[in-house]
Length: 199
Image (cartoon, rainbow, N blue to C red; front, side, top):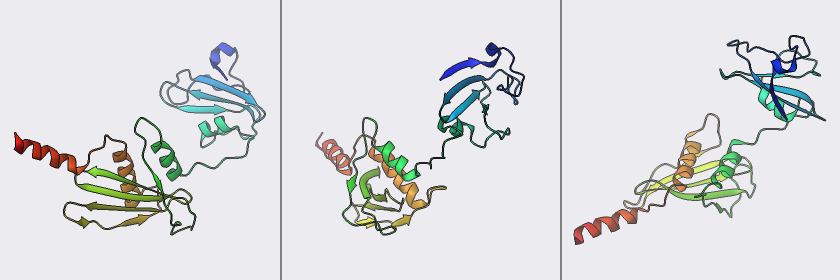
């Protein structure tokens, strides 16, 4: 991959060269070039935030709707489908210093029957436990909150809409974030209260 300003290339005003000036602010974009068996392509990023692309051997001269993806994948390559949102969440939760501790479920998914259901237990709030499951195959999500101290539980939320996120998915994301925070069980608060009385 090469990186350069267009003016370093000499004459960039022709049809066969990337734009020398940004269409939004008139600045000088910095261009990156890739040339492989999926074609030659250029990606220009301007200081104003605008992203443009240029494909010398592409018949369509108008800019693509997603220039970054086309630049990375190659305009001659078959389009690869995007990774589902639930898979991205699952993979992201396994990274970092405090990864989420998932457990594989024994029962198949209620929506697609695949045996790819994973669950987690988290404490998104003091005295509030969150038990959530998600199917890695289809994104079907079940989320439930309960308060062990009063033996009460909220309504179980079920859904599989990720964009925009349905209530079940929002609650799952809350639990994933909580699971990656330093562990704090409600009993910890009770221990601190007991210690305070002993003083």
